[in-house]
Image (cartoon, rainbow, N blue to C red):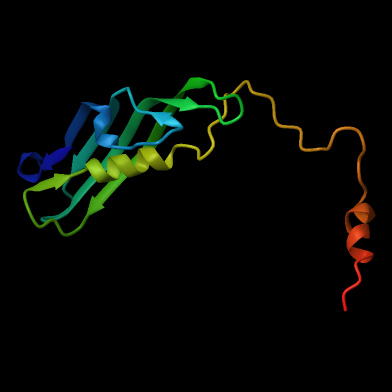
Length: 143
């Protein structure tokens, strides 16, 4: 998404629309990026060579649950997207890397279906006390 600085008036510019999922450019086995990225942004120029953009990014991502291996829709909602550049060198600013980064950072590293029950980490049957954990090590004879 490229912003042309000369098109941003003094009072600011409101930008709203959709970007193709291809801007995310990710080959990740846990995620499929099939839906467009919706943006709702406000661009302002606080001073002569500075650009401030704030707003919201949303998209729906297909995620694979790490517990059940089922695919489900995961809503990504970046409510406070912010971009600030205080030293603009040209008339164009490409926001694509920043949009991509904020969306990818909003994804969990291990997606889990919301209705999936937590994994039981206790061993089945016998429960151990604190002392049982160290008993074998206490019997170890080191020369």
